[in-house]
Image 1 (cartoon, one colour):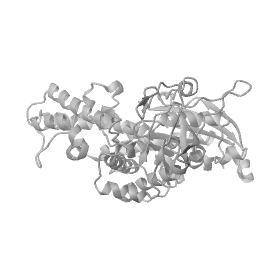
Image 2 (image 1 turned 90 degrees about the vertical axis):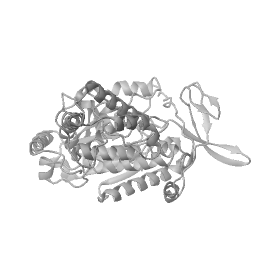
Image 3 (image 1 turned 45 degrees about the vertical axis):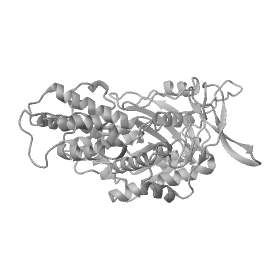
Image 4 (image 1 turned 135 degrees about the vertical axis):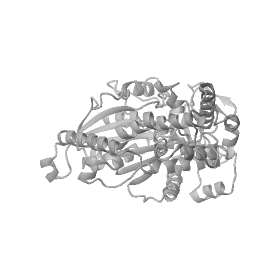
Length: 491
C-alpha cells in the first residue's frame, strides 16, 4: 500500500463496516468482487458476460462448480448497499445481444449481487454450509484506483511528479499549452478564481489528450478531472499542479495556497470516501487492461501501461485473510490482471498475449518490491466477437479471424458499414516477450511494436434455440477467470 492512507477515525469506520459485513456473511455467505480496469478495457462487458453466462448456463468447462453440476440455481438479488447505484445489467446485455453494440463505459461506481445455490464437494462441508454464495460485484473506473496513491502524497510531491512526467516523450507535446500556462502563473500572487479555472482546464485537457485513442496512455490521476460527475465545477476539482520553487511555503491567500487547499480537499472529498466505503471492503479484484491497444500505439503507451500497473498493484495487499484481519481490515487475497480482447488474435497468440501481460505485471511487481503471491495473469475475451478460419494464399494456409467490423471502421482503405463480415489476418505477437521489451529499451518510438491488426468488431449475432431462447454470450477464458476469482468459495 502507499504510505499511511487513512486516519485512525477512518480505520475505526472501516473496521465497523467490515464487522457489519462479516455479521451479515454469517447468515448469507458473501464475497465482494471489485472489477476495474484502465480506459476502454471492457469492465462493463466483463460483468455483463459473466452474469449472463452464469444465469443462462454458458459453456464454462474450466469453472469447476458448474462443470461438475454442483451449482443448482443462479439468480440476481437486491444489492446490499442502498446508496450505491445498481449495475444496469439488463440494459447492458440488451445492448450486447439485441442491438449488437458495445455498452457505455464505466463512469461511476455501481454494484450488482448474483447468488449461487450449490452443493459442496465435501460431505463434511455440506453438513455446515448453507450451500449458498452471494457475489457482490463492485464496478468502478480504473481512474479512481489510480487516485489512491495520492493519499500518500502532499501537494509539492504531486506537483513535482506530475510535471516531471508531463515533460517526457509524447506527453511533452500534449502538455505544452498547460505547462506554458503553469510556468507563467504567479504562485505568490493573490488567489484568483479565473486563473485557477484556466489552470485546471488546461491540466484536464492535457489528461484527456493523453487518454485519447490515438495515444492510449494510462497513468492519468487525478481521475475525477476526466470523470467529474456531479462534482463538475466544484472547487475540489478546480485545481492543478504548480511549478513550485525548491524551497519555501505557500503564503496565506496566495494562488499556491488555494491550489494546495483544493488538492487536499480532492483527497478528502473524493479519494478517501472511495477508499473507506468501497475499496477497503473488497475481498477479490480483477484489473482489466487493453494491452493490445497499448502495444499497437507504441513503446510509450506500453511503458505508461507498466507505470499504471505499478501504481495499481501498489494499492493491493494480496494475502490470506485471518478472522481478525477480515473483520478489522481486509486483505484482497486474490488479484487477477486480465488482458482483454483476446478474440482479436488467432488462438495461437492467446498464450503469447498472456506471456506479454505477465511480463508487464512481473516488472511492475519488481518495481514496487512486493511478492507475486495471490496475483494471477491471463488473456481473455469477455465477449468473443470473432471466429477463426483459414484462407489459402500463395499455396499456404493463412489463419484469419472473421467478424463484423464496426460502422466506420477502415481496413486496407475499405470503409465498413457495420453489417458486412470480413476476414482479416490479425498478425502475430512475438513468441518471446523479452524481444518486445528489448525494442522498448532500445528507444524505438512511433511504430506499433508487434505486427498486429487491431480492428473494432461488433458483438456477435447470437443464434436462438428452437424455443426462441438466445444462447449464452460466447467468450474466451471467462470460465478460467471465474475459477480463480471465486471458484474456491464454492468448493
